[in-house]
Length: 115
Image (cartoon, rainbow, N blue to C red; front, side):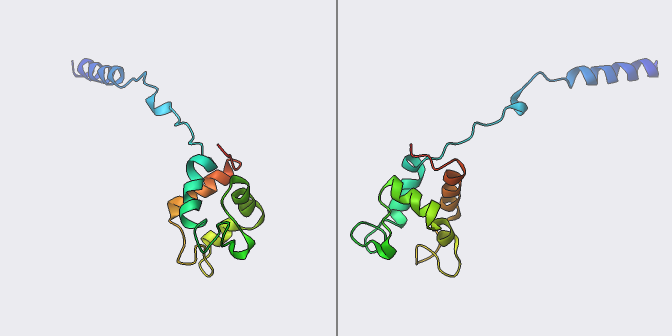
């Protein structure tokens, strides 16, 4: 009788432990990062400001007001390296928040999308 009861409990356990749910198999869709949607606001508030990299100031011969200018700064002028620098950071008052830096890295990794 004990064997029969044990077999019944084990069988019941296996029947109740099966799952047909695919929730744990779902991979979240990647977040697309673009200049217009994600990066422009960071640059406008932290870089393309009066006295820095706007058309009037043009500090270091670098204006960051358009997609092409910003992309060029990251591709050809090591803008990301300066943003991450601990000895000579941009902006000069200290590094951007890590979330902003990560957004820019994601933008780079996704191919510098404009829109």
